[in-house]
Length: 165
Image (cartoon, rainbow, N blue to C red; front, side):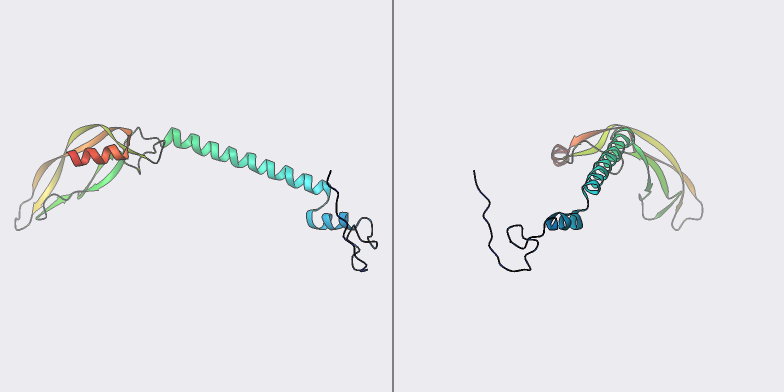
């Protein structure tokens, strides 16, 4: 077995060196208590740390459950979209609400996936229209694509599908 090597010193300033002949018993214990606290306070600090870790785990678990329940990529979310069809026409209203599947509407299990439409449906919406240089307005029916169901798709596959189209 390895033995502790004694450090020889004749200095009277070595009162906390346990190998010195001037060592005062209890000096190391007092120093440890000054730096770390009493054994009771060390145990209490550890207990508080473990309690905090359990609480943090509970918060993280609750957040995860909320995202799975409310933020999963399943149900399209309403988004306001501006109408920009013809620059010489003024549409009223100039915006509409369509349901969308996107990364800001649903969360996928991995970063390599994106939230995309699984099913869509065309919707017809009617707008008041004023054409520039005309005094009389009209009503126009515009067709939009509304997302009706979302799912997660691999980003690489989605990009390659866009290039093939």
